[in-house]
Length: 392
Length: 160
Image 1: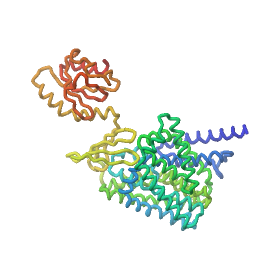
Image 2: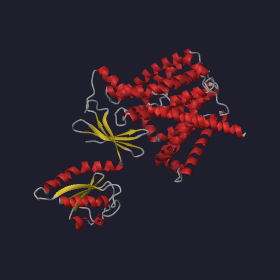
Image 3: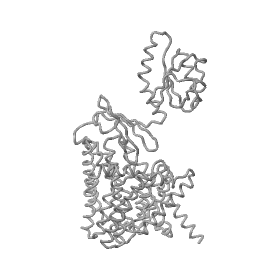
């Protein structure tokens, strides 16, 4: 027993140290650390160069907590009011976003013979942009004051609400429930999302007051306890644990939400890193080369479709050509939530391992290319227009 | 002129105005209170040529500088014919011994013969503040006196 736990500690320590090094490297070259975490996982996992033993139990539960925290913090990011205005202002662009970016993934899955379930999963993977990567890129490129930025952000808000409906559907379908059962899940999740939004709008302060505490330790324990409890209950009701956490995040608002984000961020970073590594660990690197061509094809198509979505949405708000190009390119990055979707699918065992390989390769490409595209869109557009930037 | 407020979901709020010269100038205020001054590009009004992070104190000071301008110009004009008398703006910095104390505590008149004729806080003008007026960091005092007196006044407000 003693030597076993010693081995596990050494392995865990080595993994986290390795992730720290990768994170530092990512920061140096201005990349999101997610693709490097995935590569780290591929390197260590089954069929990789080194195989780790004895970590399965810890890493399985830790990566589940990682998903819950990712979604909880996503919910904390937006107030219910922002979600409702976002929905009102950008629903047309939001629907276009779904059509243009869900279909390519779904079609490729059908072509590859992965069936309806595979299409539902891969469509979700290609649809959802990475709000984490995009928010960081917009801040780093100092674009918060730009006119196209609210357009990009409200599309992300719409996508997150779409996730709250999509994830419960995915969970029921992956559990192998019939079409009628799937419809029931849609009904339940629509109802739950509505109820939570109403509660958050009307009684957001009460919910926040219940969770809030001046004592950091008490606050942290209440938050984590609440999130895990809600996630567990949601999971038992077949509504998906992650969505439970997301909705709890929405219900908490104001200063409480800001403080909660500050306290939970380091924990999320830790557990989400475990989640990405575990996903990489469970993917056999040798399965990637056969699907790399499809991943590249999807990357090209869904980059174009995201640019088209952003271009159209920005044009509707009266933004000029350069701004439209910036909005479109900013949306290209896919990341954490694509992996969350693929991870749920793989864990259920309802999809082929090739799907995990394709999703990994796709997210690797998009998480790296997205920020680069966001940077290059404007110079490229100026080149096309034959204009040089004025300095004043 | 209209101040346009645009929510930035998950980040904060952008507030800007379009100037007579066609530039968009304003602020981005993030949830955690971080403030940026933004100025739009001339050739691409959707984008920003500058977004400059400001501390709370710097933002107040900048607001006061802009707000103070007409008032100070007017005072300077009135004192133009009085040789040796000038108008100066003095900022109460964070860490000043008078941050949170009353104006009377500075004993400015008896120590330097300088008059505090106005005080600007968050763009609002307080004309001839009384001795019981409580000062705060970020306040901009408009002082009238001799050059030596004003130097001494600035010194007192900075460090006692």
